Image (cartoon, rainbow, N blue to C red; front, side, top):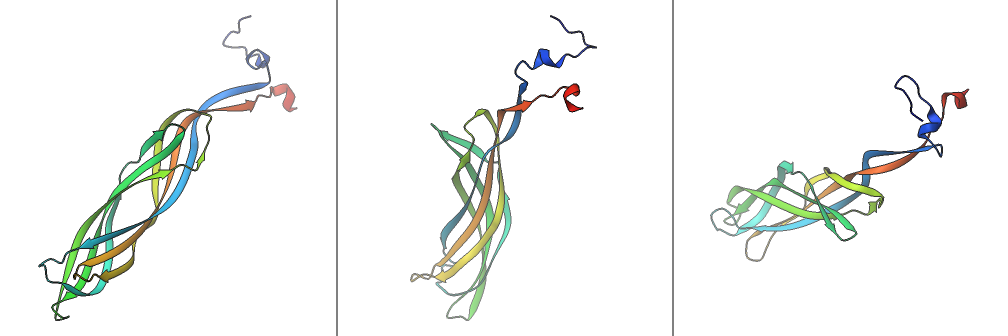
Length: 173
């Protein structure tokens, strides 16, 4: 039985009353908070005696990448931000500002994942907590130690099938 382009006979296309549609959808997501600890030497090598302040600027998150290992899926996120550290040295008589780029890279395991995905097409990542200094201190060797924390949310987008019930116009009335 053929159908011309001007006619539509719904039962011909929906033998069971349902239709499969292939679409792109978020098939998995996760969020994770990371803590980093970095040590820095002062600019002139003099031991720091006190941390006077810190600031984080220029946060950039790169495009995330999918990591698959068997049935485990993760999203690799990486980026860079700049730490500005104002510190005292020379017994508190002098101060200086240290500016340091911090690179980070982590794999966020996808905890909520729909296994009915036909193919994974994309990953998305957003910053849900910008990098913040959690603690700043001077080590016994006079180096500056800073603990940072940041949070990311990731999504895996894939092609998946959805099943929809098809209703003919006669069934609506």
